[in-house]
Amino acid sequence: MSFFFVIIVRSLKQVNKVLHIRFVLCVPFIKVVEYYRGDRRRMSRQNDIEMMKLALERAVESAAMGEVPVGAVLVGSDGRILASAGNNTICDCDPTGHAEIRVLRLAAAKMKNYRLPETTLYVTLEPCAMCASAMIHARVKRVVFGATDPKTGALISRYNFGTDNLLNHSFFFTAGIMEKECSRILQDFFQKRR
Ligand SMILES: [Zn+2]
Image 1 (tube, rainbow, N blue to C red):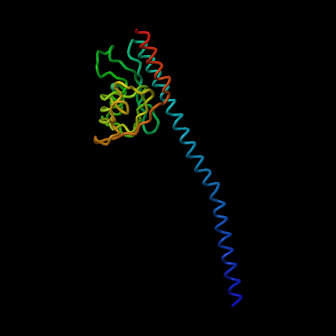
Image 2 (cartoon, rainbow, N blue to C red):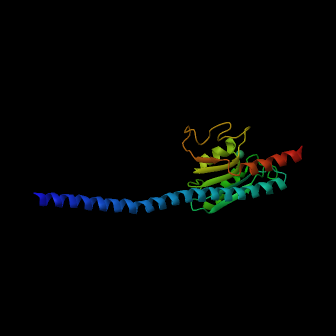
Image 3 (tube, rainbow, N blue to C red):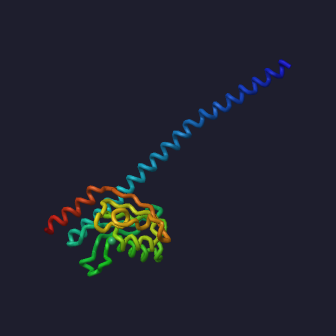
C-alpha cells in the first residue's frame, strides 16, 4: 500500500514540475507577444505620422496656389500610397475639389474600381459632410485626420458620419495626428488673407 502511495506522490511531483517548467517557458513567450503588440502600436502611430506629413506637404502646395491648405493621402491595405492631393476648388472651378474627393477619384481611376475597401484616408482637416459621404460610398476602412473643424467637421464636430451606424457602411477614425501642425497651416493661411 505504501508503495502505491509513494508512486502517486512522485507522479504528482513530476506533473507539478512539468507544469512549472511549462509556465516558466510561457513567460518569455508572453513577453515577446506583449513587446510585439506594443511595437506594432508604436509602428502604426509612426506610420500615421509619416502619412500625415505627406498630407501636409500637399496642403502646403495648395496654399502656394491660393487654395485653402488641406491635403490628403489614400493608402492601401499593404501600405502602398494610392493617391495624394491637396484642395483645388478655386483653380479647377470645382466645388467638390476637396483633397479627400480628389484622392478618392485618383485612386478609384488607378484601381479601376469605385469601391476602395481596406483603404486608409489621411487628411489634415476633419472631413466635411460631402467628403465623409464620399468615403462611405467608396467603403474606406479608416480615416485619420489632424485638426478638428468646429464649423463643418462631419466626423465629430458637427455630425457623426461614418460612425453613427445609421448608414450602410461605417469606418474607424483616428483624430489629432499632428494636430498642431495641421491647425497652424490653416491659421497662417487665413491670417495672411486678412
Ligand atoms: Zn470636404
